[in-house]
Amino acid sequence: MEGAPVALGGPRGFEVTRTLPGKQRRTVGAWCFLDAYGPHDLDRTGGMRVGPHPHTGLQTVTWLVAGEVLHRDSLGNVQEIRPGQLNLMTAGRGISHAEVTPETHSRLLHGVQLWVALPHADRDMAPAFAHHADLPVFADGGLAATVLIGDVGGVVSPAACHTPLVGAELTLRANAAASLPLRPDFEYAVLALEGAPVVEDTAVKPGPLLYLGSDRTSLRLSTASPARLLLLGGEPFEERLVMWWNFVGREHDEIVQMRLDWESQTPRFGSVPHYDGPRMPAPRMPLTRLVSRGRVR
Ligand code: MN
Image 1 (cartoon, rainbow, N blue to C red):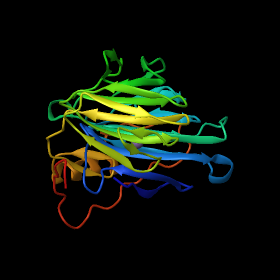
Image 2 (cartoon, rainbow, N blue to C red):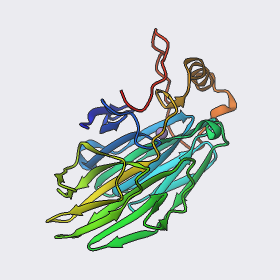
Image 3 (cartoon, protein in one colour):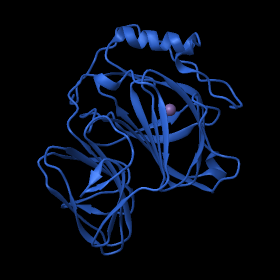
């Protein structure tokens, strides 16, 4: 699945490659959004500056390969995230946050931004935020899998999720040949972040998302030079979704209400304290009604 280049808003455009929702496939498990960015040289491109904006019906996952991002949210959390750490924000019925490059920062910024759709039963839950600096690792033959969410070979992440799901960063040493245990009832996809590893018999490189489907009990990984990948998986998510701007909902009218609540500054999304700059205005609604969509186009 090839990604599309997207320029994020803000005072400085910040280019990302969006592979979820994709042209053929909108979700992998409950993973419903994947932007990869960098490595950006911040001396040339300027840093990240995403002003206060709302979310609903999802969890956001921030994961960095290099650099730092400073998160602030309407619950009052202020958290700098660094490589190897997980920021997990659960929007539930409504939260707002801002993400910026901190004043003191590394030259390179490289990472991913993901969303997980909350299932119907939990989508209106109270918002929450968690920072996991110490994540467990599954290791095998030159492979180290840092478990962000879910379980890899019995190694379980402390992060809270609401559907059967897995997310892991896989690092491979030079000349590694390893096997990663998978669940046959999950569907999976991998995104190369660094290097040129081989997944089963397919050579991958940073950019496109490789969809692996389900019915696999293991995944063969090898590489000549050091490599890094992101593994996403989960039980196929069968609920139909309406995704519009930063909202995940089920039907047009509730998205209209979410947008109205943000624009009229009702208490639903709170406010982000100590952010120096304007909140992000919602785009106009399209002239046609938003239609809910399933996992495959
Ligand atoms: Mn966001």
